[in-house]
Amino acid sequence: MAWRYSGHTADYYILKTFLWAFVFVFLLFTALAFVLILFQELDEFRQHDVAFGTALVYVLLSVPHEVVKATPIVVVLAVVMGIGNLVRHNEMLMLYIAGYTPVRLAVPLAVMMSGLIGLLFWLNENVCGPFAARAHELREIQILGTAQGLSGTAGIWMHGEPDHVYRAREYLPYSRMLEGLSIFIFKGENRTLSERIDAQKAVWMENTPHWRLEKVRIYQIKENETVQVHNHEQLIYPLNRLPSDFGSVIQDVEKMSHGDLRRIVNDIREAGENPLIYLPDLRIKEAFPFAVLFLGLLAYAMVLKLGSGGRASGIGTGLVAVIFYFMTLSLGKSFAQTGTLSPWIGAWAPNVICFALTVYVFNRLRYEI
Image (cartoon, rainbow, N blue to C red; front, side, top):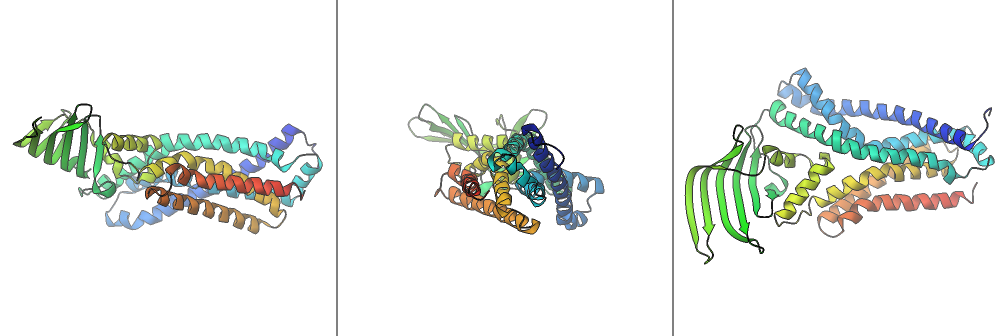
């Protein structure tokens, strides 16, 4: 080997090797995601006679979420390919001879992966979430062209404020209309129910902007617990919610941004309900970006452990680690949604397990090198 190993040179060489592999695998997964989404939706595009431009926009809007979701796999494969090549060509051995330890050589990779964590947070909040929301709207309104109602989790919408709770059975995105709307109005420190408004439907009025309630029944509860009932055919009501507030809950929770999902959790809490069904997904959005670091370092340690055992064994081990991670994450989410496990534990347990395995493998490597 012609070049001398200095600290900066070794770091640069390892980073360059990893980055070339990462870019290659990333582009491969991006192209694969585009093709898979296209073929998955192709029959529906044909059935609804969707224009080529509309179909292309929908696929392009859907790709970022799938690519970000696959980033831990991309990182693992990039480590296996990049660092695996250094191992097979005895370049890692030369670094050991020069006095570098496996932990020291992992530092540049850890720094790079930490940067990826911040990038994933930013992409989820500013690219994946908004793009997925636009793709969902495009699908429901322009591609399917249906006014069929869509229900939130358990068929109930819930939005809350300190003194108001809004619930609706369905939201019709095509006509921007709510079906089966109920409004609960509370007063006092104890949040005593003072009024309930039931409407058969509520239609968004663009120019006002207010909602027009139809077939309305108002229940006014007096302090002596008597109830007065008033009926109205129509009623203009300043419902403090936009159609987008209801439409956002229609989306697959997994594809929502962290900010949108956090707002829904806060709304449900203010409505006096338990947001347990959403909390695991919220915590996963906070823990998942760290998978690139913990899985990446685990893959690095396993590549060094396997030595020159071949690329196939390295890729196989990496994929097993990724499958284990996602299985543990899914299991933790299921337990958290039933209340058996804390949402924090369910979301972070896979990262903690990967970190523990990495420490164990690094400890074994000390006695083998």
